[in-house]
Image: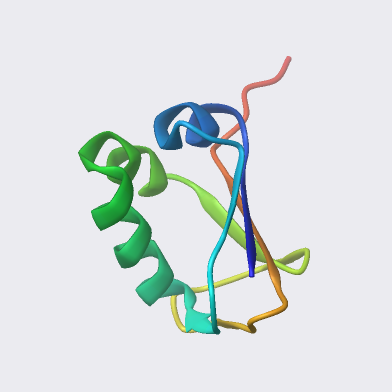
Length: 78
């Protein structure tokens, strides 16, 4: 799967994109990424929305091996 990070999530992850093998439930993927990328990323991730193939996901949503997962922090606008 392709994991794309946006704005503050990309900054905290230190990258804008990465790949992961296999499929995974979003909750499991979040735990794996938090362990890999550290506590600052975990803090940012806690307030992010997760999309799987463009659809908002819950922790129970399964992202297939060929999915695109977007990690989007809250955006400010005006």
